[in-house]
Image 1 (cartoon, rainbow, N blue to C red):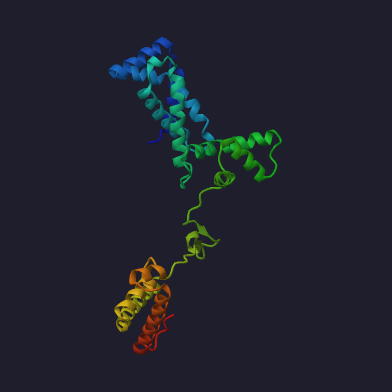
Image 2: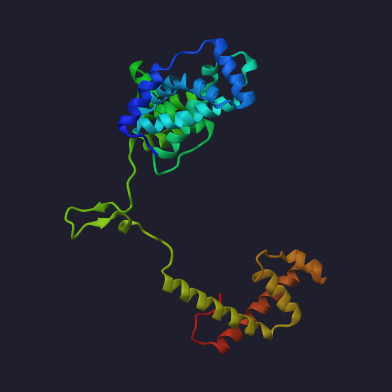
Length: 288
């Protein structure tokens, strides 16, 4: 649940007034929390680092998300850092917590900046959060050039493809558009965007018709194959009706005849089936 404007201001004020911790005091609080799960120690440790959460959250304001939400996500990262911190490593808690706070906020931004999910790999995250900064840096240094050149330089700096940079730049430059958004001036004539989407799939009645025709032709074909000898039927099924077509040579080895003889039997079997189909069903299209 997002904080109200008043409670958000009160939170920031309280965070800025929280006293700093000396190294030894910070170490002792971290040990109490890790070894005894002392809630008072956890509260004092995290409260002293709330200003760090606020400072990191402020770096992500340009993504258009509420500052209060960014701070809340940063607090999640701060608590995660407290749960994983190892006091005996002799590093300051703020140094360790910075990574977890930033990671939590970045994940939140990626989930909520757009209704379309972007890439979540480390390189895609780096591209998402650094693209604008790198573009601005190139512009300040007079290295802007054309878009393709800019994309190539950014791709080289981050370690992604030029196409990935172009796609991400398009996403960051545009905004989400609902398929239910109206297109047109007047209310009576306005249509939704989705009304202009084209579906190339067959219509329902066409799909039903194709299914019925397919079943009918399958029945006719199996009836027509009754005119074949067992060897002719075997060859025709293996060569024309199997998902994995058997070669002439393979059939020849299996039947003890040459592959040329197999080809001749196949041709004769096809002619016999065509004749049977045309005799019993003269109106439908011929069999190729």
